[in-house]
Image 1 (cartoon, helix red, strand yellow):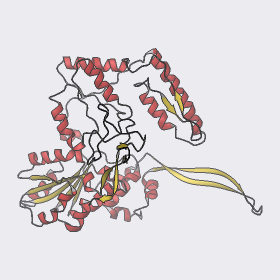
Image 2: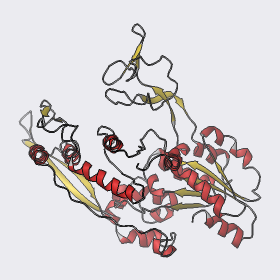
Image 3: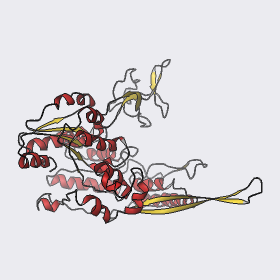
Image 4: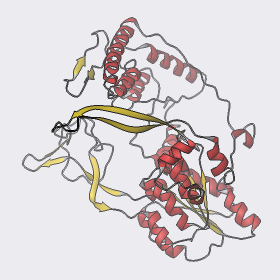
Length: 457
């Protein structure tokens, strides 16, 4: 839909034969943009800018006026300032092998036991993480800095594009390099068009910098400075004042008595005033709902929750562990420490799926780590209720001639997708696992290829 707007503006209304558009979108959507532009816009060409080196030739290519609709696409992560990567493991010259920077163990092939070679040029599936502790092995290279394509085009090809389109603009909200891409895009194009399915995250200050980049006059007219997020929060959002009492300090000379110390801060709360839309967006935005596109836009879809009871020993261990860490978290909150809340949440979500795991909990910074051992009956070779139900559902769908997608969370330190794949494979189901090692730009092609090779993902 955003790709057709410049065609309507320049060709249908102004009678032009050509125009130039730069599309900045998430990397994994670039191929989709290219495919839909060619299929939708008459006589259009869609060119992808694959790297910053290719951006160096664009000022010369954009020197002439376009004779047909030109669409140039670049991934958002490629458009920002980036850096090189280097292998972060340590090489022992005397011993002749790499060691992990975290656990310090020698890096060896898990099957052959051979040490990794001296020359490791690029990150691959095999060398991206330590095979023992799974720590990342590639880090930023301080000496290899790349050119920001958007900054280069803003300087050497200003206003060479009739329009710059930013997809998923809500991801460019912060004072980061990605956010600067949005600011620089206005120097590349004569007009700017942004789109998103998530106008706001629920917090007013997330829209502050986006508004300043798209329409700074509306903020300046209200006296809100570029770095004054607090005024935006007070005027259009919700904040909670917090006062902390840090105790009483005795005067060393006994002349001025005692002094109390308090700290006053504020905490942002979810909430966005309708006045933001009324004063900032209503005259510059088009709000489109799915039902505006027609009744048959999406296929039938329904969600349901299936409740499953844990096995007795599994439930007893779960309730015991959660109760113990909840007590620790409550005690920590009495001293304004929230460090155990994340552990409580993670344990609540993963313990039911991996009841055989030993839990490691550190009550506070000055306490040793506690190890909570599960009962001996909870072993990884058992099949637990949720796994049995998933296998039953998959077999039922396959029997009806349908294929199945399974979405899992906690796939790094808790390889749930790998465990499900092993269970399904043991039952004779062909399985393919989409891991994080597949680049986002290649995932659509991976899905298309895997559809012919497997029945469950």
